[in-house]
Image (cartoon, rainbow, N blue to C red):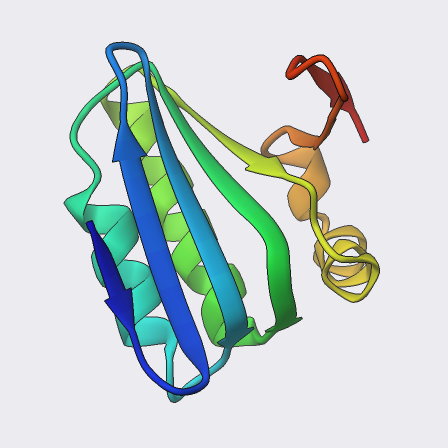
Length: 116
């Protein structure tokens, strides 16, 4: 399942315990609707994992979408994890304090997650 435009696209894979959402491109005011729609379309699972390795820009609108998705997932008893943020995006997460609200991890070679 995926949504796409010239500047942004998102893919989703659903497992028994984890939903993986991979965003690529720029998450800004023009594309945040697609990003938010993908996060809302994710079925309820214990973990919603958002791969940010392909995101080059994360605007305030993108941060708000992540916070809203985090609150929604948490209300269902789950956890939202951010994975492999680009260095520029990682700075946004630190500057906004988002890394203190939800886990930000780097994927290890063996496929396990380690804290960022």
